[in-house]
Length: 436
Image (tube, rainbow, N blue to C red; front, side, top):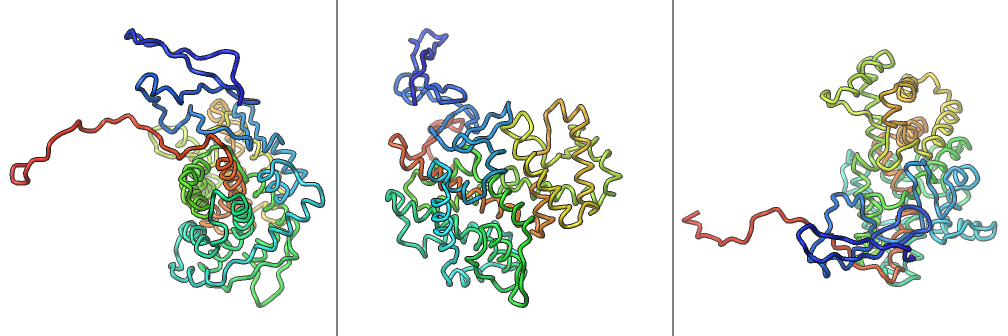
């Protein structure tokens, strides 16, 4: 972090003395005004609901330029990573700052592979849930419960503990998601297979049964690997900020990641692809492709209460770069499975066509986002809609743990403590109950 050439001067119209505030420059992106001493100097806080204009940390992991539609992991464009690298390489990049060479990749992949099994007692923990529980409810419990089984990696201040916790979390998340799925459908759990890739192993644990051999499709394996890479990190979003805030108290990594899982569950965040598929299903019930135009007119009507899910993004004011990549994968998967004429997928393509051509959506830059396509791909693969967000959590774990480790290693980090603008009652006295 380096000081900018200029400084910010805060002046007041009531005659109070002005205050000079330092300005810092990042390597790219907007400068930041340092307000850490603002309260000490003025007795005031800043007011920023949702922290939309507040930098809560300095980070070297992920950079987003929403106007350009640019996403960089450690400086590398997401387009290049998703095309030229696999998820294990992406995880190594997020955790250690550099892409691995062949030897490093082999060692890292082997390390992750050797930690994919979970303690056998986790099965008994699972049985405490109802069979119809939402997978994210199960995942929140399972991830938090890992700290009860792996005591040797719960000290967040110990770099070795953080290292092994990171590997364990990345390795075990696919196993936990697959276990949650198998439990809800009443099938036996499938153990990890060390001869499969990270994505291939997940597909096997999800869809294999002890009755017969399951052959992993290379197209689906590649599609899932790309989904993982595209969702691996996304700067200081709600769930990542939750992981950092939770971890700032010194809690163990498993608890911090469980907090991220809980935050991701929300339909405005990780649940967006699930909400998108539910929207498509509702349109299908209305009459399918024939009703798309009518549905889009309702979307334009602010009084209708109808929302278009899977389009637009909080940060990107241009096309979501991940969406273009996911669109390619979507077409590959549909072709591989012969689903180009599936009614729901035809409906999705009709919706996409209108959104990309209609001035109302184009002028508002409501382009399809990554959730729109990833939901379609996951459904085609056979992943049930309620499990979409759990798959998202699986992928984002690598980013969460990288962000958590970065924060703990930052000498400036403190326990998170946002302030407030109090609008409640002033001090008052309690009256005896008989006179209230």
